[in-house]
Length: 263
Image (cartoon, rainbow, N blue to C red; front, side):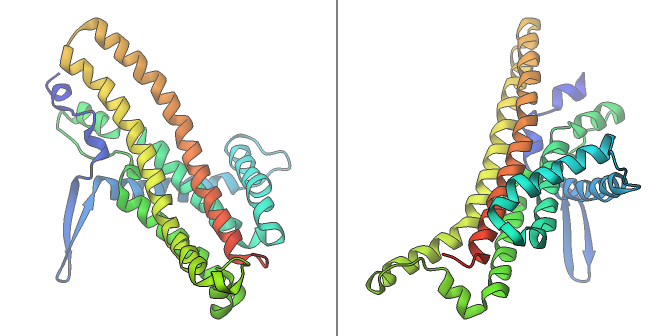
């Protein structure tokens, strides 16, 4: 009970240093969120090869789940946007979706609470990595860079710079082109903040409601709070899928805009 009393329901959404070590003269700090990124990577490196192992004509279990999601993303999301070039970019889109989805889902598991209860010592390992603006920003920058790299490879540097401007009278170009350029630069910020804000908001609501248990210390309040947290956790499960899909969909849209032959 002492460990439970010390736990802060909102603490997992903040980055906490776990380990520090030196590489040469540089000090490397590994936070709980960075550790969750590594854990997510390990999970995907194990789960995806298992799902792809010994493919069956009629897939079952994990293979069926992964294949269904991949087919949906390719045929229903990417192909309407990318057309005949879908297969060229779908690998990146699949990776983006599954990585963000797994980050979101692993973040819903109260790992730090389980470790604290089992060991009797306070633990900071765990928490939703996508509640860290630096991690969502890194994902957004990767999407931004790949989008423009593919656009330049498709049109050439000068052709791509010209491609950024929509068809318009020449006298409007000095006004329109800077706006289009600004819009392209703003896209990674919108991707990062959208994912970050939705994940933080959901966990803050759950953490606040759960915190009522520690504030009132009343059985009735605790029962209502726990029931509300369970219901909101199912909603957060849906949000985890939706936010992974939205991020991937917008990335596919930006790739389509960058590589399309038409304005």
